[in-house]
Length: 564
Image 1 (cartoon, one colour):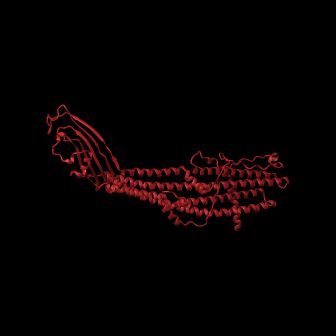
Image 2: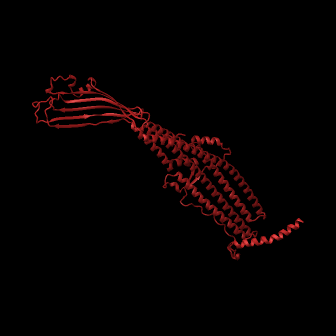
């Protein structure tokens, strides 16, 4: 009963389905180009005579001569560190930061001032106290000459924000006033002055702020240089293993071409004895052409990969190695040991230069905050000056018996001795006091600095998250590449066994040329996948070293002046 019901339903639905299918095809027809009915009897490929095997395609690369440079990975890395222009720019940035620091520290260099001055003053003579008209004729003008030398040493304190100055004043003068008793006379003074802030600029001032900030920027430029070196090494590693893959894949594709050519020779032998049809020749030539296409693509990949590595290694476009073939000597390696994620994260958070740069920026922000907070204080500077005098000269005839002390009579040497011999001198103590009523500039600068500190906290958290993701992805990439490499090697082995078995079947007359070429394609695909997996694994290791900032240690490279 059930079978009869099914037959009735199918007989009713079948016409409907045919009508729907016909209607759909009428609405959206699939147009296929017609295959013309060709007369193949006169085609050269189908003639019974033997046909020569096509030669291997020309694999000469443009601009690459016959020279060869064998290169290990470490040699490639060291060439890049010596010649890479990006590294040179980063190295110069470190040097610029260091010279800028030296320039700022120059504010504490002692300054020697030396200001010699000579003057001649002539004025009409007018009777004054101590001078009568009979002493010197009125027609003789009053004349005074002075020659002064005032050397001094000024220096800014590195601690406390003060400034001191040692000075020595020396003057030789002549005068023809009627009341002048010493001419020429020598005046000397020796002393020191001190300016010391007590509130604003005592713990930190503009000079110390700029120097402390620049010291942090020197460390920051070191971290930037370290980051650039790591990036370049990582790029060299990736380019090196990519070139290794390209060269090995080229050999793989070349082997596939030779395999197809060998198959064509076998077919020609079979055609000559009447075992195979001439139509099999066209199938073999199609396989050769397809294999040659893949080989030429692989050769192009060699050129591209080689130029990427050369760009990282060579200093400029005039380097002779541009026309040299690079031959990597290192082979891909496989370490089946799993990567510890926690250790990788710990390495990254301890060593990543990006975090070191942010730490430096936090330190700079603390210095800014300290400085701007200090600038909100009142300005109170203590000033002190102390110096002693010395005086001597030749006593004029008109002044003899005038009662001058004997210590004042003499030359320049006597004036120098009088600095300590005479009981003369000056002591002055004072202060400069400023109280800003609102001080909005300093308060606004302090508020800006605190806001920037909050931004740095958020930026650091964001960077730490990015590093967390980067390391986790890198560890997973290594793990995946390990598994893919094992799978690819197993697939290659299976493909080799399949092709070998099918070749035996073919030789026994139990298989076809079409199946042989299918298994050959599967083998070359499996070998390419294995080579790709080996390169991917070594590139994943290089990326993990970059993510954990262990590239320098793994490459046995030490950067002078750069903290790890």
